[in-house]
Image (cartoon, rainbow, N blue to C red; front, side, top):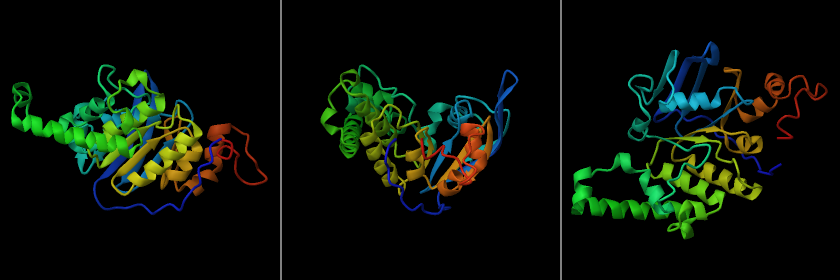
Length: 281
């Protein structure tokens, strides 16, 4: 059990771009993975998406990113539909970046080069300029390298910039994967189980980092470590069998009997009115 101290949660911020999901449904082989799911994520707000295994969390992320199509419903970001002619390579231009459950780093590139790769979709110079080694391409490459190193330093792994991923601890690789997402300067960051494989101390550092990012972007977070979710999220959406069963502050979700039932079946502490699900997470 990690010991991350919760802090007061700010109200949702309505300014800037917003992710809007309304009545989203998708099925696979007759089984509904998502059933009329609706949620919002505003700028300067961290929204957690939690639920038991198989609840539909990863499917939700995959639809937002264009890996999976929806059967019905609406998904938009900043007023632009993410269901019509939307592909994963469009994300950066839309202001969206995502980390993966693993790390997904390129084995043959250094950490610095991996981070720089995250900005390729937004480069101003074209392929011909890079191939010919023109000044415009070289100047942009230097700018990207400087920014990539700054991000690695910010995340505490700058000393490993010239190392290949396979030679480094998993936590260092996770930090580099996060830096690769951040170099695109997203207005919406999708974090897919960022705490997986991290130690307690590393999760404490992750929590501090997420709180720091909240002032710069909206964050949608899928995570199984409840202490982390409760400490960094302004709002939490709970999925169970593809349906939203709760949407509210961490405090309201923690005390919701339906959420406790989803996690522990009927093992609810009726004397206190809520389950120990989150206390023991």
